Structures are given as C-alpha cells and as structure tokens.
Length: 354
Image (spheres, rainbow, N blue to C red):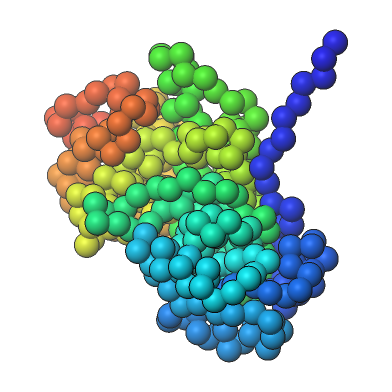
C-alpha cells in the first residue's frame, strides 16, 4: 500500500517570546538562514529608523533599506535597491504589516528567503503566502513564498499602539466565519475543502476566542501570535486564502473600496464582518460569543463603533460580493436586497446587544 503524504510550506524557525529580537542574529545563524550575517533589512522610513538605531549594532554586515511603504511601487524599488546593493543571504522585514508585505514581495522578486519580524499583531499577513500592496487601482494581493522565519518579540509588541495589537484578534476570530463559508460553498457548489487547512484556521480562531486573558498578558499575546502564524500557514496548505477569508473579508474590502478615507483597521473590520456574517448564517449563539469577545478587547461589533451609519453599512454589505468575484459565501448564498439587509441588521443588533 503506498504511503501518501505532502510537504507543507512553513517557516524553519518560529520564535515567539519576550526578548526574541535580541537573539535574531543567533536565530538566523543557527538555522543557517544567514551564517555570514549578510542581511538586507527592510524598514519604514518612520518608526523603522528607531528600530535600526536600536538593533543595527548587532548586524555589522547588514544593510538597511527604507523603501517599504506598503505600495507595489515601493516594493519594486526595494527589490531593485537590494539587487543593486550586493549579495545577501536573506531579506528581513522589520515592522508592521505594510513593511512585511513589501519585504515579502521584494524578497520574492530577487529570489531571497524572507525573515518576518513583526512589531505589531494587526493581521495575519506576517506568515501568509500573500503580499497585500496598494496600487493604482486601489489594493492588490500578490502571491509570494512563505517567510522562512518568523520572529515576534513580545516586548516589542507591547510597545505598539494597543489598537494595532487588538486588531489582530478580529482578524483571527473571523476565521470561524471564513471556514463556515468554505463549508457552505462545498455543500452548495461542490468546492473542494482542504480539511487540514480548515482545521488549522478554525482551531487558531477558537484558541483566541476561548482565551480568558487580554493583550497585557504574555500568555494571551503568545496565543494570538501563534494563531496568526497558523492562519498564514493554513493559506499555504490550501494554496489559497479560502480558510482565512470569506464574507468577513468581503465586507472589510467593501469598507476599503466604498470609503477609502474612512475605513478602520483591516482586523477591526474583519471582526465586525465575521460576527455579522455568522449571524446571517443563522448561528446566533456563535455570533453572540464573537461579539462578546470583540467587545471585551475593545473592538467594534457595530458599524457605528467605527463611525458608519446603518445605511452606509447596508451599502457595504450590498457591495461586498463584488470584491471577490467567484468566491461563494453566505452573502452570495442569500443574495439579499437592501430592505432585507436592513431588517436582518436590526435583528442582529437586538441579538448581540448594542
């Protein structure tokens, strides 16, 4: 009988703990990512400079690049700068989501592995095989290899604005809704489900949903960090963003496209969208649990929490399916009219409490 298996693209090193960044030189050397210390650090030209001043002495053979601005043009400039500057063992993305996405794209463009060093936990992009970058059309997603290493220093995370840490909670919890959408599509359209990818994303979400702590606790921050990493790997396992992105993300993308100057953080919008989509699916109990946890962590559960009227939210929900053509979620399944969305939203508010 043949033994069947598969290789899962995943980091060779994942280090999540207080003080991890102080040991970055040891990590990349011991894991043979960069025995020579020849690293190309990608940072922003703002807060990244402070990180450079703090950690550059530990990397005398490294070069630092400040082109990581979250745009496709910036990512291309970063790649060109790295290519012209010399030979490196790896690229290190040091910063928030925009920096890491730029670094992921640039590393792929020049054919180097990437080490992602997160300075906040705002979303699951730090370990995903996708770089989300602003372009002339708004924002695009670009396929890239997974990072070869993930470093999350909890001491550094605690220095980040609270909002940029708690937003990651929303982006993780909404995977409960995303996986349910995937299962719905399987039943209705025959779309294939990858059971391992679905299990990883769902259990990551459950771990955060059930954790009693908050972002001031190392235990909770560790769980949140691990869950964000697992969500990223689940996308690699599936070969698609499906286990991490359903109606919750369609709603978030609709906020971005309809109100580009007023949108909240991605994770905030996804958490709200995930709770509402779960209610649409008829799982009132889970929607209530999600809303309760989001509130406990100071995250929005109603559009008014982030400055939008009910009518504006209705427009967002109506438009949301257009953001991901071909993706089947509860929104496509119900195909709701304006008045239906208004009525269901009113019921949602009553169910979760205002």
